[in-house]
Image (cartoon, helix red, strand yellow):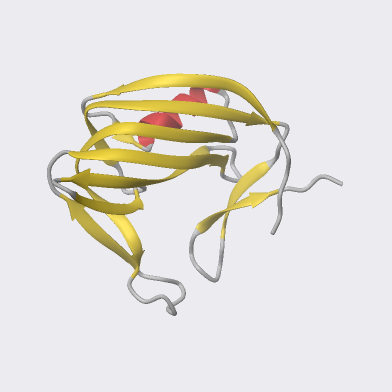
Length: 150
């Protein structure tokens, strides 16, 4: 395990509107605000999309993703971490639990999900840390790396 200690910087409360695309609209916002590392939490509803629900075979590397279609508006509770690529572009890795009619599906929203009516988001900027998302050769994922300072 690698860990770094930071502090909460600015806190933003966003109201996403019908048709806004997650994670795209949040990434655009944090880039405009100069946030490089942060935490995101969201509640609201999303419309039809595909979410990533895991690898097809656990032992297969690099894994082939499994996606599940989400049909119709679903309630969502989601959380994620913002960290920059080596080029400095902030990327949000966000997972959500999506529910409708008593059934819940949980997965990654990286393929994009459209807000249905409203999404409420809180962004906590984390300052005093250095993070970067780097490609991992073994898995093919772009993984969070924390840079420990001596």
